Image (cartoon, rainbow, N blue to C red; front, side):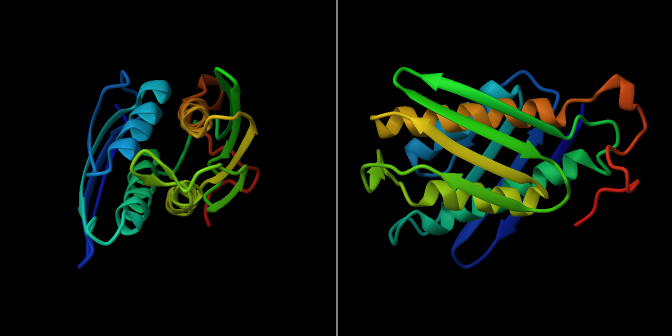
Length: 197
């Protein structure tokens, strides 16, 4: 099984992440932000990743540092699990409905971190998570995983549904992009012969 670990400790947070790319969708997640935990579990379940996240942060201020640092460390863990990225499919996308909501995510594990997020939430918070932190999490993840991640919320009236559809789509797109393609055995999926920043 391809797996990766990463950790980060600052005066604001302590974060540890372990991810198994070839897993069964099991997760053990504790960040102190319940809705964020629920969204991370969607990545694991729909990406078929085995994911452990343990985070403690300065939630008495707000959840910004915790969400940002989990994105950083999860991205690093994914990068570590991918190694030199030989044999992976590299690019994938997924479109996921949830009731009236529809979200699309496209991923390129190019070694270059970049994110784009299209869509707005109607409320400043979804559960106990500040809505503005959702694109910020995606950006932190993308930059540290060495991935292009494009998220588009195409339809929806309910913020919970829109966000959950996006995280499910992120899980499915990451699953397909990290999958090993037997036709690429031993090959780096780039005409440059390497995947670097």
